[in-house]
Amino acid sequence: MPPKNKKKVTPAKAPASKADVKANVVLPNWPSFSPLLPELELSLHEILPGQIVTIPNFWTSKLCKNYVSFLSSLPLITTPGKPKKGDAVRVNDRFQIDDPAFAERLWSDTSLKNLILGVNEDGGLDMDEKARRALWGGEVVGLNPNIRIYRYKKGQFFDQHYDDSNNITIPGQPSIPARTTWTLLLYLTSPATGCIGGETVFYPEPDMSKKAKGKNLPPPEPLAISLETGLALLHRHGADCMLHEGREVLEGEKWVIRSDLCVRK
Ligand SMILES: O=C(O)CCC(=O)C(=O)O
Ligand SMILES: [Fe+2]
Image (cartoon, rainbow, N blue to C red; front, top):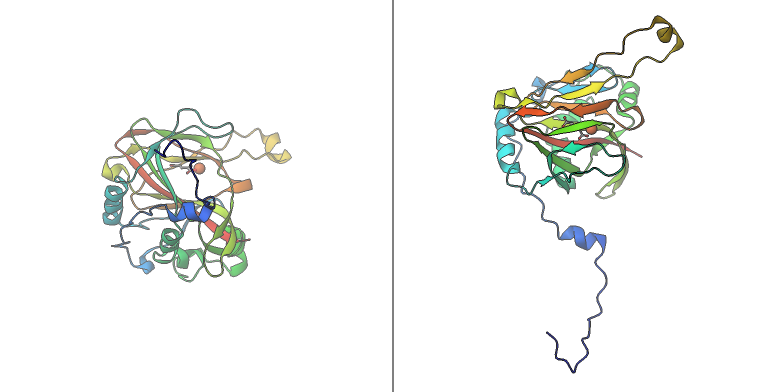
């Protein structure tokens, strides 16, 4: 405590800049991405044209298991009870961090980059450059440094919602102004690891054209993507995002790593 007869002098100190605050964040010591399958054994699967693409076995079961045990040591935060106005009800435990180096590893040290950019032609979707840009929404430059880890326990879920597109900067020399166009979900668990339920379900829009309306068709069936250990799921977001949800987990734990594909702005 300062002596009573002396005025406390506060040393002149610049307010903490955003960079200072960021510099104090301790980044997780993410395990290496090993073992992975050889790139030539992996491929993109178009589940719903222009909307949903998957990569089965993007991560091996062994790597997923190793990550679940590592991620369990992170300080995950349970969703506060009531969502902000306009936000979907999300009941799960989450860890979120800005980690450009991890995002870069997930992009370049796995098969993702070569599959998305068509460098690995055999595993690609047989597209030319123009079609590729149309699909991904521009020139893909990497993943969103904002990494989210989700753990859903029994009874937890993510209610129906749309994912927004965000403007971000991928740091580097030079840094790249970018925009997110597709959501990336990497499932680390599945029924094979004791997780029942938790499917990501998409709700296709009914065809609103006059012709279709005249036919009085029933609304399109929801499309449920079952959890598979190591499956990467990409879905278009922003203006053309489909309504979707993470179904309630009925047994075990569902673990997901989330980022987004980014295109140059
Ligand atoms: O966990 C899931 O299946 C869905 C997650 C999701 O929709 C999101 O992160 O926006
Ligand atoms: Fe979502």
